[in-house]
Image (cartoon, rainbow, N blue to C red):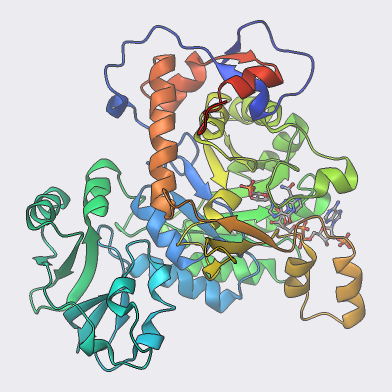
Length: 485
Ligand SMILES: NC(=O)C1=CN([C@@H]2O[C@H](COP(=O)(O)OP(=O)(O)OC[C@H]3O[C@@H](n4cnc5c(N)ncnc54)[C@H](OP(=O)(O)O)[C@@H]3O)[C@@H](O)[C@H]2O)C=CC1
Ligand SMILES: Nc1nc2c(ncn2[C@@H]2O[C@H](COP(=O)(O)O)[C@@H](O)[C@H]2O)c(=O)[nH]1
């Protein structure tokens, strides 16, 4: 990456910069290979942040089908974390896992479950065999105690699990249906595929492990029984382990990395599977070097840019994210490693700029909180707009949950040091209510950015990107107007 007018002597945020188009021989945005340039080599260079309100098994399986990875947070109990890994590992790599109900259940049992799926239906099963579909629309105006079999739609599009996404797409288009139900040779449910899902399956490659299962990551804290948790997560099949804390450039992080590296290496010697380790968060080249020396394959970069973050206002500490990513990516590359740009991503352009600056992949938290797949329950405000509650991992709320084994005094003391928001509303975008909709939005933007730079891969993109520094009005000029001025 080069600056149009030389590297400025002050640090820059994503909003401070723009990319210039350069001559390109790339004929189509579909020619661009978005494989991440970190140790994971993900088909889609996105990571879902290890935040309790956002990343769970539902999020993990959905994004893995589209080539990305979600990190199960450190605050989940070891059994909940290993259960999430097991569920994702057993999920189908093409067909979605639907909400399942039975004909005798009542509408009130199904209604809270249906919003957990962007496709908005539950599959009604009789002894494992699909017999109906239930959507919100089927239940409109009906008594909540009515049994599901009285309201369900029974005219189904059943397809064999061997069908290709393109065949499923053509069939659904021909039948003017939105969802197909895939079954095995005995007629039992395998999964579902929507029209959009079929299209996406043809466009994205899933993130798969060596055994062809969906990939998932998990976080390990730097306090407490780190070693035991790391062993349990590796045994369960975690594909990447993340260790992060507010101040990643501290001795305890370096000690934890060394400890977990030993556990990882023993696991690798036994199984032949070497799981990458991620350490963070830091924003300097020195921090990057120290974490890599202690065993990090990937360094997580970002102090203070997160949407739930109050660190910069509380402490004055942090660094504008574009410059942090640029410098840390260069330092990591010198050691043959990579970084993740973590935090502050609010538009597809931010992902593109982080990748242009050399990030191996980009971590997204709060933006994905406002989707059907995040862990929080769907709520509605007074106007009926759908939202999810989110909170920071260093908020008093998260700290209280994390320290529940400690004395009242220690918990009260710990929550004095909050550096995050305890409650925020992340509204679902009616045009993009699912995480896959946001992934479409982001990846189409990044594909386009690559072609503006004449790049076919993300390595090329970083090499060819030309970045300029812009004024506030330069940034404002680029914002679309939804109403006239
Ligand atoms: N990217 C970012 O800007 C930030 C991210 N976060 C995220 O929040 C989550 C929780 O992190 P964290 O709050 O570190 O909690 P952790 O549970 O990881 O604990 C942090 C440990 O480090 C010690 N510590 C020393 N100095 C600091 C410091 N300046 N800030 C925080 N802890 C310090 C704490 O001790 P003691 O409490 O006794 O001081 C505590 O033992 C992580 O996922 C982290 O990534 C949090 C803040 C900033
Ligand atoms: N300072 C804080 N940072 C936090 C907190 N919770 C999470 N985070 C960091 O934010 C990113 C995600 O950023 P986003 O803009 O995409 O939401 C996450 O990975 C953490 O590094 C917090 O309470 N305080």
